[in-house]
Image 1 (cartoon, one colour):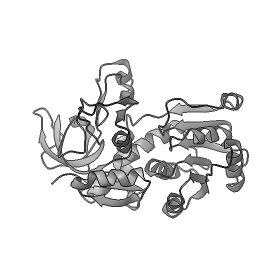
Image 2 (cartoon, rainbow, N blue to C red; image 1 turned 180 degrees about the vertical axis):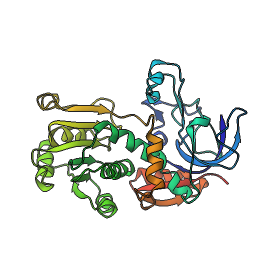
Image 3 (cartoon, rainbow, N blue to C red; image 1 turned 45 degrees about the vertical axis):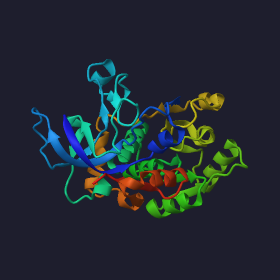
Length: 325
């Protein structure tokens, strides 16, 4: 066990908790304390007696999970699916990372090189989420891919698939400033989705404009939009790969007929698991992904509510909060 003094914290999914007052669709009483934040880095404040790989002052990225380590899923290496896992900011009973200190599992603290800034280090958790999603697809060199949602997760997914050799990557969103950023960030082909077109029409338009032939080889849905999930089915070629990374409505209408006759391969992606943090750290350490470009604004801890409000309104790409001094 280690206690980490938090330096920087992100908040993507956190904004949903803050706005909805609910966790996994279950409302939290106004009298209950709801801790927030799960994307964080910091310096080690103290370590347990049996910890040998860390020392006080080490700069670390925190994988904010405490799996049980004994269930079948944990023994399979799928600890993100542990039914008894405790995850920062996902329960009123669990500590979270928008705080001065966070008590973490020592082997879930990853030492980081000094030349990377605190803000860049705080992007490791979103990168790990992206790595987890991308590894499910099994990207092959030269494949064409469509990513729905040009927020932080969609953009880092795009960066990771490009790192693995995908060729024609299309970024889809409804906001012009996000698409403009996607074009600058990775020279992406972009497509603005509009409400006046059906999922079938939008898919056909994307395929035509991006010259995807019979359709995309793979799709990552990172927006959580039900319409995008539907469109993804239509934009994929037969036998294509589909990863649902974004979380939105719990129940949606789904084009099951098209899904079946195309023999699509669909995966749900949840957080991050074995090896994902290491892959993210390696990409950052070797400057393979320009994560610093994603950071729109850095807020003081006292201005956390302002930062959450900006994110809720779709302002910027990644708004970041500094840990309390």
